[in-house]
Image (cartoon, one colour):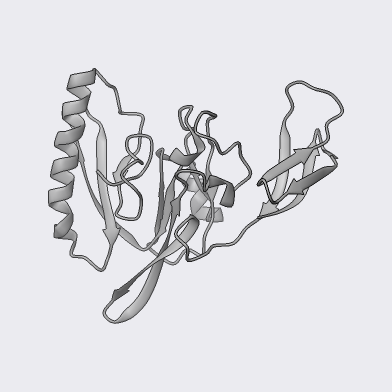
Length: 214
């Protein structure tokens, strides 16, 4: 990752990057609560960490979707953060990709500001609960999905690439709905504010607060 600049209150601040320890050191005028604005860039690689492409074929044509693997300490490959499990924060995700007609993005939380996305191509999602950085996730590409609601009204979705018949998702959706209903009843949970979508590109740790595999 390359850090281009660090600003506090509109003013550039001196900083150094410690690549050996994967750390960023910022010189501040005083201690306390501050809002940092960082300009940075990174790479999408094939090593299945951070942000990476997943490949598949449809009718002999090779395609790809973008997905994430932040567990256990790879969120730092996507954006600057305190990338340790004990550190908690809320996340306001906005993303833009080379979107073709019909392609979509999924993340931990429901999408917001849909009309603006139609004009700008920027996908925005509701603020997450406080959570570790490795729980943040998103997937973007030519996906298809099916949805259903639990008896408590929680919307559940299952998504895949179009390399699979849409009907193949019905079993996963049925199991997902019944599993969520069990946990809602057993623990007295209210999961209606979460985006309970499942996708085959993310790990089994990414449950409830993110798009994952049930």
